[in-house]
Image 1: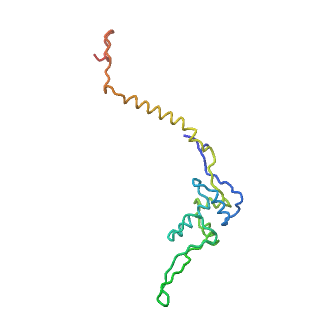
Image 2 (image 1 turned 135 degrees about the vertical axis):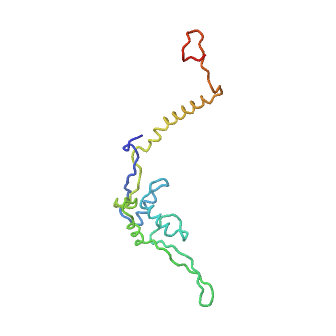
Length: 176
């Protein structure tokens, strides 16, 4: 088993042009992420926005500054006719962003990311090619085991007899 010193570990990586927790810096951080990256603060904000506006059909994406989520509301007017209007149900503004950043529990992943002092990307550092380095040996061992199993599966008698020797003195442990 490899030691802990040769495993890849998550490490914060500074992002150029990102200095504070503003909407612009979070958008910059979200643009540089790829689908297989580890979570960062922009993913935290995206997740919170999605959870709070899921019932209203908002997609999974980082909210823009002062973005609003609307709900269509139908009212009966004074003349008995039906009126339609849009009602604001959620506003993603600076106050909302500050509440998300303040709301992390001690010891959580969010508090660890916020403790960096500025938005950082999370990357794996260390020998990330450990699996590729060990793959040829693993394939060789698997091939040897398969060949060994195939050799025993060949057609033949289930019980092999002990060959009797007639040209020597009989021994006690020899089967006639």
